[in-house]
Structure formats: C-alpha cells, structure tokens
Length: 286
Ligand code: PMP
Image: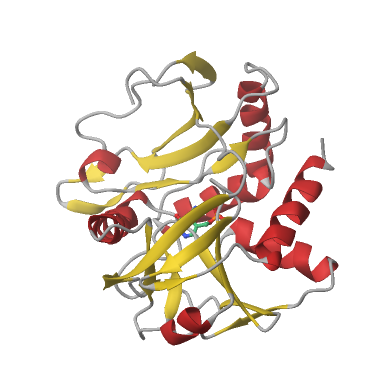
C-alpha cells in the first residue's frame, strides 16, 4: 500500500497516508480477528454507505468484538473524510475493526478492546462496461459451522484468494464458487446473477456466502422496473445454459461475464438495464 493515495481515520482524526494502526501483539494481527467492509465513492455519491457501516458492526459482533462506533456516527466520519477530496474522486471506503487484546491462553479476543479505522483509497471505477471471465475452482465456500461466514472477515479471504489465483492461473478473470453442497454460491469477489429466457435468478442466501449489499440493491431496482429476480438454488449447468451472466459487488457495481470456461456470452440487455438503473438510483441521491 506504500505510495498509494490513502487517507486513514484512526483514534479520532483523519491522517494523511496509510496510518500504522496495529501492533505485533494485537489479536487482529496474530489470530486474525479483523473485519472490514467495502463501499465506494464515485460521481459524488457513496451508495448504501449506511448499510455498509451497519454491516461492519454486525461483522464485528460475529467475531465476538464489540463495535465501538455507531453506524450513523461512522457515516459522519466517512463523510468528513470524503470532504477532503475533489468531487470527481473515485475512492474505496474501508471501515475495519480488529481485536487488540487476547491470544496467549485466551484464543478469543477481549471484546472490550477493539481497534477501529477507516481507510480511503483512490481506486478508479471501471471505465464503461466492466467485463470478466469465469472458470470453476476446487475450493468451496465454508459453512457457518467451520468458518465465520456470517461476517465480512479478513480471515475468510485467503480462501477467496486461492480461488482467484487458481482461476487466473488458468487464464480466467474470476472463479465461480460452489457452496458446500456443490451449488453455485458466488464468485471469489462478487455475487452472481443469471438470465435465461428473460427470467433473472441469483443464488438464494444459505449462510455460506456473502449476500451483498449491491446484490440487494440490484434486486430492488429491477423489481421497481418490473423485473422479478428469483432467489433459488442454481446449478453450474444452468450457468452454462444461461443467456446472460453478471456479477455484482460494491467495487464495480456490475460486471458482465463474457465466458464461463469454453462457453461465451454477449453483454446482455438485463445487465445493461441493471447498470443503468443502479446509476440512476445512486445519482438521484446527489
Ligand atoms: N462476495 C464476496 C466474497 C465479496 O467479497 C463481495 C464484496 N464485498 C461481495 C460478494 C459483494 O458484496 P457487496 O455488494 O456487499 O460489496
């Protein structure tokens, strides 16, 4: 991160640069008790910022950490930071909590000493329509009994990283990931939608994957536009047979899938419409 354009909120104020926030003995550094959320600022708006701040607090609780900043207050802190940038900036907004005490003889983090920071990082929004390609991966989403999948926790992401690495090694942009049952869950970094004969579907949340805030926003936007999105169990063959496939997540909002292994797709009308609806909705709050 050194050298990137970063600002950090830590211990009550905004700092220029990538602030030093953790110590060698911090539970978060040693035993991985860290959670984060990712929101975006672009075109002068930070869509669903409150929902992202609420989710990072819920993630903290799932790791037995006590969140120390209310979601509304967190929104105010982020807005103070955003005001330090020109209106045409494109930023990644990352609030984080981690355990400070714990460890040695006490594997659980001490809940009452929780670190908090927000990182603002200049990352451009993909210009125009973003696209990617998918392949399968042997790595799966864990279940709640084997990992804290009810949190957006840093400790889950090495699993996503190896999925992504495996896909990239095969020459693809991302991995289409199965849940524990072998059904489609999500990609390594975003949620997935398919379209077949005009019917739009997305995997039904089953507690194994992150049912994203952007996913929910697209479902609501499409519903308001008269398009029902069915949440259901989806098999890998259905993705191969689909007319359109797209991914949703805070980073790019919507990414059209142009290939799944040897199967190729055009950027379809539902993905195009969802993208338009998303930005119409987001910019209307400006
Ligand atoms: N799944 C995973 C594994 C992710 O990392 C993300 C990005 N946070 C998403 C889905 C999409 O979630 P959201 O729309 O809330 O960003």
